[in-house]
Image 1 (cartoon, rainbow, N blue to C red):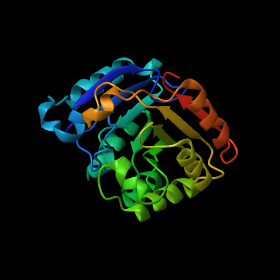
Image 2 (image 1 turned 30 degrees about the horizontal axis):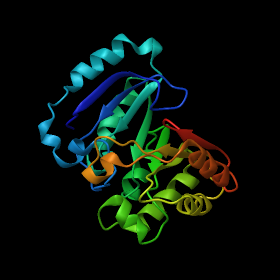
Image 3 (image 1 turned 90 degrees about the vertical axis):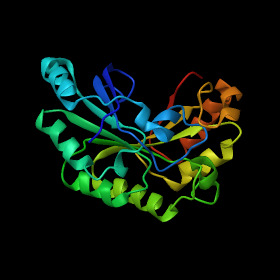
Image 4 (image 1 turned 120 degrees about the vertical axis):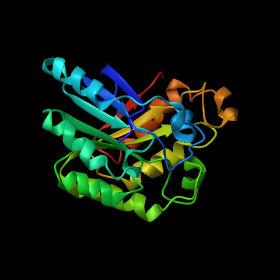
Length: 233
């Protein structure tokens, strides 16, 4: 497994947890609003982080670490992901996995093997043709839907999350997503970050105003048990 990024301490990547964060290269999506475009389009430009370096840090600081977040890119495109997760579990760490939900088989495998303690799955758009616009590729919607069901019946703690991009998603779209995942334990609405984006045209788009984002959250509360808002609103 090639690792291209390592954050030693994060309080932001898993609510209520102190974690290390490990970044894996490459992604099968080309979301125009992606704020890590080089991880997606040019992963070879990153130096590899030796696993031994990560292991040494974890073992030396194990007493204050709650877990590890494995993110990307898209972790599930890597066939040796279970091996990596297993190595972290053997160090006594709880594991959070970030995924776009395109590989329900991999997701189900790592859950059933007890290799993850928390999963955050992105839902980019309503489950219709609009999904392709947000993902930047043709999306296998059946796989996304199946991953949602895998999480719902798994018993593993999880959340669904959506980044709200003003020119791509409307408040109505967010409500449709919330309705689709009705009854979900947790739904995170994430503020869009301008600046460096895969599609340069989005780099100057102003995020939704605070009031509109909070309004989306209020509407979503009709359908899901808990709604959180992340980012500067």
